Image (cartoon, rainbow, N blue to C red):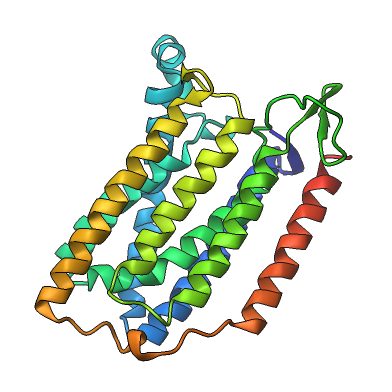
Length: 281
């Protein structure tokens, strides 16, 4: 993993730094949405911190079990070497979602309204964090100018592909969030949107294959999309039957947030520029 600098013999890695920045930005986005929706910010702060921890554990376990179980059975101490890499974002989503649902029910936190507040925060955090990932893509068939030279080989910059797609998904959620038909809609759009992003990027990465060009991550993505569509249909029908209020969001005409779109556009450009700069030195 690329080291940014050392402090007292402790290495600060690029991936760790971008993940930390992503979590911080996502935290403030979540608080902004929580305030707009009239949710308890203190409760959601606790929920966010606990979910991040559970998500990291889930990401590690999913990577170990799905991608390289035999290696970790032979080297059990390596299970705890997270700083060396080996996290699965899909595992983080699954573990984080299950924990968050349990925690919100236990603490009497409005589940689906809270999920909608978290969705844009999660994807912007993922977009920023992915910039520092050191898992590059497969070798390029042609020498495209945006390729990254790693060890004398031109590779697809899979990290930046995913980061850009995640920034775009954030803009979709951000501009849709005031015009929803039911609580939870933004969350399910996020789940489906991110799974599609990951499905696309997976064609440019190397992971254990199931058949042909389809990897195990493709299968995870398709499974999550299917479950998300079923969950969204069930939730929409349930709220329609109960005639639940969705915080008047449905009455608000959807408008593009010009300021927010420009800020995110600039952030995306800076992320791409930083990515190529850091991998050119």
